[in-house]
Amino acid sequence: MHDLGDMKNWPELQALGLLVALSGNARSIGQAAAKLDLAQPNASRSLRNLERDLKVPLLRRSPRGTELTVEGRAVAEWASKVIEAYDTLYAGARAIQDARAGTVKVSASLTVAEYLMPHHLTTFRAAHPTIDIGLSVENSATVVDRVRRQTCDLGLIESVSVPKDLNAEVVGRDRLMIACGPDFAHAWTKPITAEDLAQVPLLVREIGSGTREAIDAALLGVGGVRVAGEYGSNSALRIAAATSVAPAVLSELALRDDFRAGRLVPLPVADDVDLTRELHAVWSGSRRPSPGARLLLEHMVDSVE
Picture 1 (tube, rainbow, N blue to C red):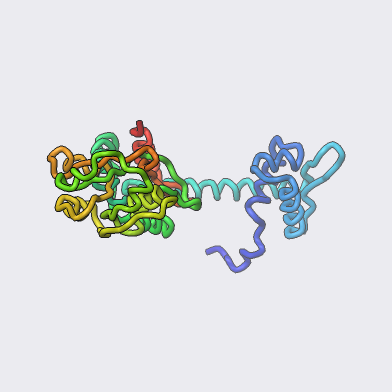
Picture 2 (cartoon, rainbow, N blue to C red):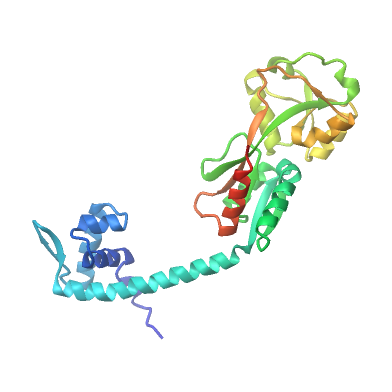
């Protein structure tokens, strides 16, 4: 059993790596630092601290460069065994991580989960049958929160803005539409401007949803949205709009079947109403995606036209 009580006095792995580099083909501290992707001042400081802590003269400095002392070469030989042992530890940990990559936890906003993920999951599973996908459905704000808390591997959001502390890739494009029941549509035959649209009471998703953020952003400069009703699901919005309560704001993905069946009618908007948006995959800025999550991300990115 190893005595671990003195670990606080053990040399830093980074300094040992510099020593090993100098025992190889590095002819200066600068060259050794470059191999470890370190700034030279930091490398020099690490080596000075190592000499101080070990109380052994490790380096001989001259105008021609830096070379190891006899003692330094002996310590470098022992250090190489430490580096090798750590490399074995790291490789083993990565192997465990790869083995656990079979399950990818995905948290997706409602529109993405309902209308894009079924196709992605079908084609991805055909290509990678050993990787399981666990899918939870939230609004975009909750998805972002789950990504930050690292309770999922990937988040899929439809928000206009992407948090700066998260990594992101575009995995789709979408457009919001204004839809209403056929009876209501007779009063709205010409494209409506952003200023006029801001005066129309609309049925919208709840705050925190990407769909709500998109319409809020589109009308921000003209006073914002007049809310006729707020709903927590796309289905509830479509049903309310079909009864001619008021027009609803929804993704065209969510409205296609209603348009085909004539239950809802798309209402024309002017060019100054920007209802387009990009759909993003987001993941933690402090953690690399698992191999399975990276494969799923690449699969979705490749499908973007």
